[in-house]
Structures are given as C-alpha cells and as structure tokens.
Image (cartoon, rainbow, N blue to C red; front, side, top):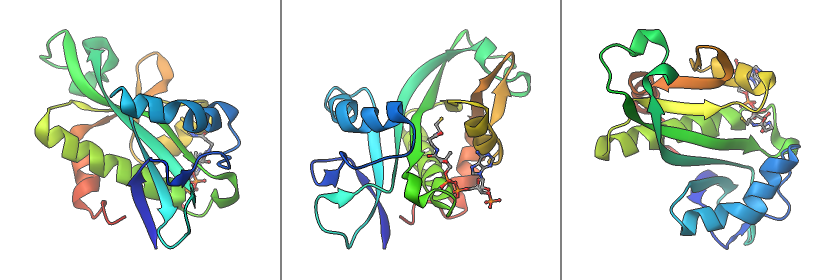
Length: 173
Ligand SMILES: CC(C)(COP(=O)(O)OP(=O)(O)OC[C@H]1O[C@@H](n2cnc3c(N)ncnc32)[C@H](O)[C@@H]1OP(=O)(O)O)[C@@H](O)C(=O)NCCC(=O)NCCS
C-alpha cells in the first residue's frame, strides 16, 4: 500500500530520479538539512511494504511563506493588508518510471490535505507554487491553480479550494 511519510534516514534518496536534476539533488542533498533547520518539510510517497531504505516514488515540500497583495489574483485581493501569510509548495516530483500513472495527483492532493491542516493552526490565504516550466504549470492548472498576474509560472490556489480537496478525502495515504 502507498503511504506518505516524512522524509528520514529510512528512505532511499540516492536512487530517486524524476528527470529534473535540480529536484533530484534537492532530495539527496538539501531536504534533510531543510527539515532540521525548519525551512521546509519534505514528505515522500513510498510503498509501505518495501524494505528500508524504501524507494521514493514521489515527494513534495511545504513551508510557511509571506506574500504581498500584488501576489494575489484580483478575485481574492480585496481589502487585504500589505503583507499576507500563505503556504508554499516548494517542490513536487514523481519518479520518472512512475510518471503518468496518477501519482502526481496523489501527492498533490496529499499536499493540499496537509496545507488545510496547517491552516487550521496558523492561517494562510492559500497555497503558492513556482512552477518549473509551462508543462508543470499545466499540471497545476488542472487542479484549479490560478496564475498570479504577469507571472505565468507563479500559481495560487485559495485556501477555500484547498479545503474542498481536503474534505473530498485526501489524507488517506
Ligand atoms: C509534473 C509531475 C509531478 C506529474 O506527475 P504524474 O504522476 O506524471 O501525473 P499524474 O499521472 O498524476 O497526472 C494527473 C493528471 O494531470 C495530468 N498531467 C500530468 N502532467 C501534466 C502536464 N505536464 N500538463 C498537463 N496535465 C498533466 C494527467 O493527464 C492527469 O490528468 P487526469 O487526471 O485528467 O487523467 C511529473 O511529471 C514530474 O515529477 N515531473 C518532473 C518534475 C516536475 O516538473 N515537477 C513540477 C515542479 S514545479
């Protein structure tokens, strides 16, 4: 059965390959430091029956961030203070060999579930992501992420929509 776990020493970071070297290197070299320094939490998708070190099928990172009124699409930007709290999906990737079989959707929905949980404790206006390229942006757009005006790779999903995904049954993994 597939399961989301917080990245730790029991996961095989070395052999993860999503086809984007910067993301592979992040998982290998930086993710655990960022966890230790409270900069980003990294979650991995694994098969819970696999033996340690467990192969990583996909991963994502979440952090708290600060944005400004101009970063919010006009529909949600009314009567806001200058500086606004939000959550950031820093990275998201699926192992190349497993791409195209629904795992990207699985881990994105899990990221939304954890975002909704975080926002119960400390408010955030929504989830921001900097898409790597237009292909990645098209993937996020499928789930309702909106372009931040003038920056097509900077995307926003309002917390209301995040909560709808969470209520629809995410968090099973
Ligand atoms: C982008 C990525 C995470 C998608 O993961 P995946 O497992 O291949 O995607 P899924 O199979 O879960 O696809 C889910 C849905 O998104 C669609 N989709 C997947 N990639 C897409 C793309 N590039 N553009 C538009 N739609 C896309 C699928 O067709 C599917 O739609 P459906 O539910 O209507 O059938 C994966 O290709 C990846 O890791 N790429 C390299 C790293 C990367 O670019 N990460 C994004 C960083 S910002």
